[in-house]
Length: 235
Image (tube, rainbow, N blue to C red; front, side, top):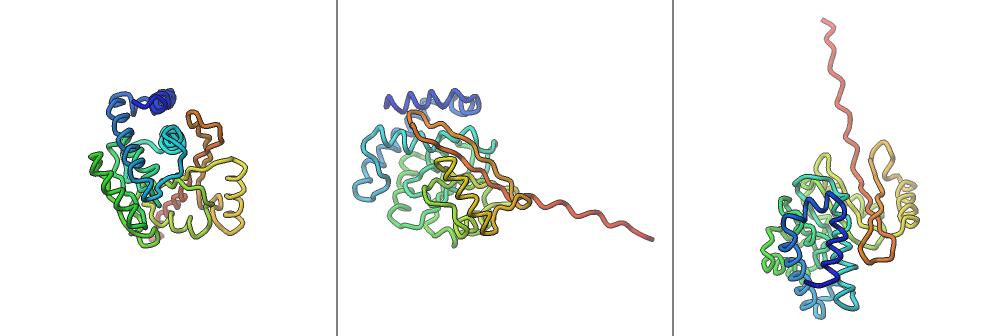
């Protein structure tokens, strides 16, 4: 096994929740992650899937970064979509670690969608790949949306993501520095989004093994509207 991957998985397992997920099948998880990395490395020169310097960079900045939030995600098996999946990050590493959940990878670029289908088949993962823009995906289907990108959460992006959530669902966005994230969320509020009465949100620090950079997970859930008061009969 890749030494950096092995050491990184051991660090992640210091979280009891993560350990409970990984410990029973850690060898299988590690083998699938290595096979996945081999697929990325083979197709990356032609497809430009990820920007990496070497294998260690791939492990830390993409595989371990995708998995570092594992202990912060809502618990239980659920319908999960990775929106703008690209190379399958974080969707494929999460699908490897959460085999009880149903994963959909939404990717608009044909070649990358083809890579995702091929990789899912090679790894034996039961994931669905939708080759379409986020705006054209059917709404209201997913309990959890994962979104790993380094561009800002702007109103059109947020609106497109939230429409895909089922009632009671959650958006989980992988983000960087806390200060930049607070500024980003402040701009959304100034634009009329994410008012406290309409949304619940959490910002959780995430430690990526061997990465000396700030990483955070922001969880956003539309507030469940209160049940209507019962009608009182006057008869």
